[in-house]
Structure formats: structure tokens, C-alpha cells
Length: 408
Image (cartoon, rainbow, N blue to C red; front, side, top):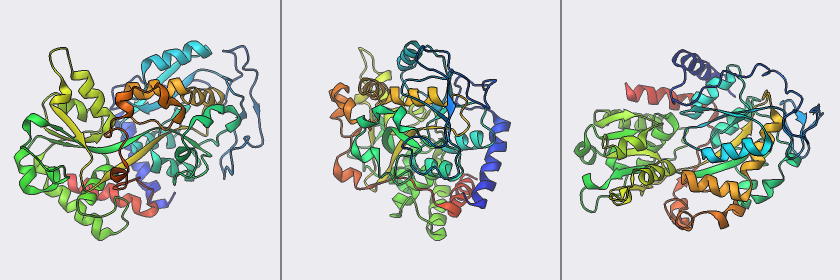
């Protein structure tokens, strides 16, 4: 990682330390044995972890240290999971604990940047983290991730080909495994929208359109996503490295601030279905889960709320499971990743959180209404308008700076 971004991350780390966790999830103080993986004792076949010169079939590991040699199904202690909130079915956690005789402690982060700041400032004991695409690349550059031991992950064979290799942030899948994927767009209260409204970022950024919803708009508190939305509205790439284009996006965002009720990356869907906003910028599956949860026998929230990818395009993202380089329980971490990659478990994940699965083998177990929903599995013409967020190197700090300037 470039020096400028490191300065930014250190600042974020200090801020995160000062503010503590904002997600409201269970906290993890960190296990006492966070420095070294312990001898496995939870399952009968776990054996004792031994150090290896290099992980089997992991590819070039760069400067990262190889972890202990792990076998499929092996555990070496309890699991500490650092994930986005409400992103995994609690029944899957219980199933994993029962199957392997270990305890799972979950902690949650609201953004990739918060997660990075926390683990790069000294891992408090996490094993598995769930970074998005561009953040995987950054963490690889910083030697924060353990090269995967693919012999311990036989269920990798369940991944669809487009997710098993060739992803720009980790081309060989040496450090990460796709967890879920989806889109970022707009959720709206249909009862508050004009007839035949335009499915455009203009609902947020066009002065005339947005003024109709003054104080009823929420945006993600995320520099890459929100600056990216403004960039797409302007017809630019959300990965631009042009200061002129980014400054134009900053000014556009600043001009709409008076219409914005909140910058929220954690509860944007609740703000929408709860009536606090009529337009919300956010992630596809979170909206769908909220619409489903708000429905009752007498009220069908799906008839009142709607999610779409704006006509100008937006973000397609891939979230990934990865193991921290200094994870205290790397073998349990491998076993957990392999567990999620099981076909039925992968389907249970999607059926719970309404996000698209990278697990091809899981498709036969996914609810048909989810699998056939074009808002969850977009057609080719929509995918063509989407971009993955990429690490822009030295330029990355500008996204944070300009976002902060726009918010005022």
C-alpha cells in the first residue's frame, strides 16, 4: 500500500479506537492466545497443528507468513468472525458450532475502511474477515491475509467458474473466497414517488428531482460507494483517478446535502421501511430482507417498497471470506470457510440474506423466487452497466478527502 493511504488508515484507526464499535453487534475482546494457534482439542480428528514452509496449492504468497498446515475439517480452537451485520443466518452459526464442537464469536463492522483500520492497527483476535473486492487487494498488499491452504477447502469446487479465479482483486484466489455478491442502488417508498418516476441517480443528485424529497434521502456513509454514485450520475467511472472528475462529484454531492437526512451504512433499509426516508442508497439484499421482514399477513411491504439499479449504472460488489495473517485459529478458519462453501449451507446463506450466491452447487437449494429475481441475479444488460470498486492506489485518499469535504 502507498504511504499516503497508510496515513489515512492510521487516522481511521485512531478514530475507530476512539469511537468504538458502531454496529451494535456482539463485541470480541480477543482471545488470550491471539498470538499463536493452539493445539486442536475440539474435535476428534483435529490433531496438532504443525508449521509448514508453504501452504499447499496456495500460489505465491508474497511476503505473508504461511500458517500451520491444516487439513479438511480440522479445528484448532474457537472461531472469531468479523463480518458485516445481519449477513449470516444465525442457524448456520449454530450448525457449525454443533458440527465441529467449537464456539463462534461474532463482531460486526459498518464499512471496509472501519474493518481495515481495526485489524491493521493490531488484530484483536479475529480469524475470518469478510472484506469486499477492492479491500481484499489492499489487505493483500499490506500482508494482512494468510495464503489459503486449498487442500483444506475441498468445497472450492462448488464455486461458479467466474468466482473461482480471474477476479481482479485476487486473480488466483490465493487469499480469498467469494462469500456473496450483489449490487448497490436505490430503495424507494413507492407511496411517496410520482407516477412513472425515472429510475435514475437524479432522484438524489438532480436539484429539481431531489428537492421533492428534502430531508427524506439517506446515503451510504462510505466514500467509495457514495462518491461512486455521484460519478456514475455524471457519466464517469466509479474508479476514476481524475481529480477533476472526482472534484465534480464532490461538488455534486455537496449541493444535495440539504436534502439528506442521514449518511448511514448500517440501518438504511430500516430508515426506509420505517418511514424516516423515502429514498435510500444501499445494498440490494439488505433492502429485500427488510421488505420481507416488514411484511405481515395484512401488509405486503413488497407492494410499497422497491429497489433498483439506476439507469446510469452502479456498483457490483463481491464480498469475500479471508483469514487474517495472524489469526489465532487458522485451521478452524479454513474449516468454517469450507463449511460455508457447502452447497446446502451456501443456499441457506442466500435464502436468509437475499444476496446472490457465488456457489454454483447451491443453486438447486436456493428458493426459486430468489434465484429467478432479476433484482437479485441481474440480467446481462444490467450487469454491463455495473463496475467492481477497485483499489486506486495513491489516489484512494482523495475519495476519503473529497467525501469528507462534501459532507461539510
